[in-house]
Length: 289
Image (cartoon, helix red, strand yellow):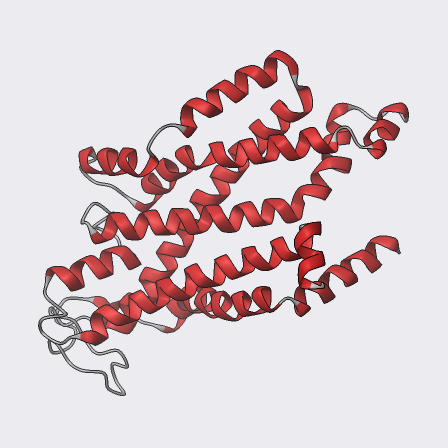
């Protein structure tokens, strides 16, 4: 009963948070467009010369066509889907690795903590963007799953450090001492007592990791180092600039992916800010939630 009241209270606070509501209103339409949109479009629309070249927006082609006669709306929907999937997988894997390492280091302490902290610090000093650019340049056929794994392998250290700090703080709380006295094992304490208290924080970490992964993909795509054989938002912008969409006045080719990127990034960041306002006691007092 108490947990139900707590959930209801948190839901009310979420709905009162302007940042969270604005973020949901921006991100959820992109999510629906990316995952439900492909169900309503034909793959034939993105074949070369499926339509006349460089058509402006019309009823048949709401976002016009590109320089090789492909429907831009169909490209946008498929690109958005792949970019979102990359962000979800890269962010999810990175958060999972960081959470496991952070929990072990923070809960066990001692030599285990020292060893894991040193490993984390080594990865933290690696210039992530430069490293990703160099690796991408040397991979002959970079695919979306390969890029997701590459980004995930470099995104976990920040999460590990933050989770370690949170776990170290929680393990000294009275309810953890009570759980130990009650005879609960370490795994039970971690999964029943500590992890539920960190779920909102993990949600914030995931939103940040997903944003970072998608930004990296867009950046790589724009400079021509992304997965060129796939259709992502970064690659879509790359080909639009490569074929001179700006010079030729083909705004309907370049503008839509940029708008989608802005909506996704702003939406995720506003959701992150809203969660921080609710679950950070200091910010909660300032915002009055």
